Figure (cartoon, one colour):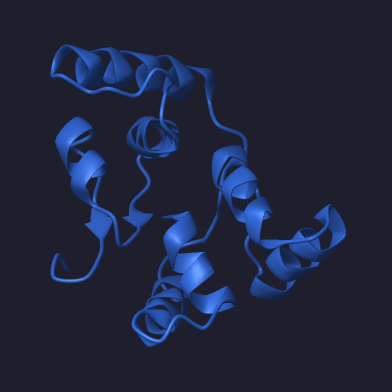
Length: 134
């Protein structure tokens, strides 16, 4: 299972609204799935850390490894971005959610997230674990 950045940030920053839900889901999903992140999620998480060692130590404590994104997923992310642009999307670079969603789609992984909009729109085959979706 890919763990989206927002879930991990909820826990790390003890978000008053979402930390309890995110902690409960991480615990529950860890009983069923191997929890992983990819390099894009790692890069997003780096914004909340002062150095790579601290981030790596936190991920080790959480027992969440970084797995590589398969090339077919990178290709699919680009195709999803083209679809986004054709539908009026204004961003000029491939968005992180496209890399994460494509990785999940290609690898057959569910995604633990609170942000379902892009995943559901561009990767409808991906199973999402999110508030009000389960």
